[in-house]
Length: 112
Length: 115
Image (tube, rainbow over all chains, first blue to last red; front, side):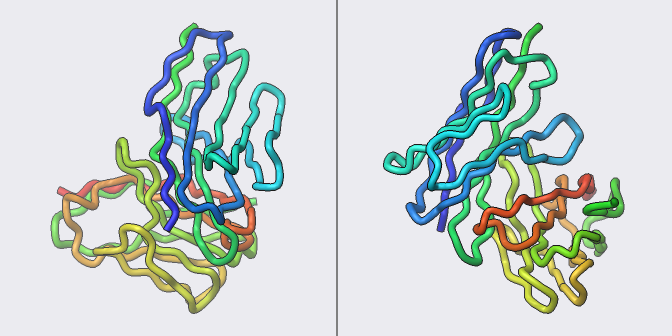
């Protein structure tokens, strides 16, 4: 089955700097890669996703890149703000009736 | 628009007790699932369902039962609670199983402590 590795587990950046979180996956058939943000004490919520027919996707300060050959994808946050502080989860899913598999999460702290 | 509703939000159980975590969604989603979240372990899938009458095991199913008698409801039963089941539990749903790229919506979570 699918295995998703996420790095780093913790990340601290200064406000205004960029943050990058990386994930690798094992199943070459996986074709859907969402990212979820979980604020302290809250539920995870989708912030951006990418499908395997796209190499990069941007939404304001957030971007995700996908390298199918290397089987890895990354979340990029530019001009970080204190409200970006949260735990971020990557996930991967194959086509068909298979559930999402999540990485173990990255705790991002943005220092003002 | 309620989305995914979980109850209770907080619960303390004694070892050996049984209980049911309730989950309901009002979005007519076929796919529902239960995750547990432990520090440093991410979101681990317990059980999932692709439609009424159909359930399947996830990564960590031992000690838990589920049923899906209606599209809306997907309760999670702890048969005989153990301290290792102390965790935060999230119910989630999506239009169909996420392999087809459908957004998963999570409930607010249920904090369970087993003493």
